[in-house]
Image (cartoon, rainbow, N blue to C red; front, top):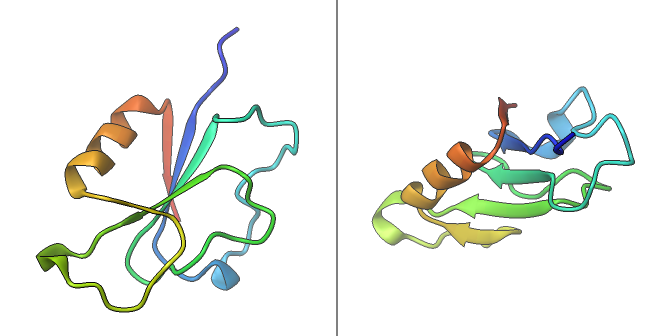
Length: 88
């Protein structure tokens, strides 16, 4: 059985999350990714998957944030390459 790849789109600060992103600590490496959007500034504590951040439109670089910067087009590619996408 192939592993299920999950992409989380985090729109708010991690401290505001009421549930853990990964229920099972046995998730295979590379199976879970996170994209920081809008007010999200860092991944939740203990998140071990790949972290990206959507670059703001207009190319402005305000406050630095965690994660690898990606464009809107790269975000669309990430969404299509994952089996599930969850917006939090």
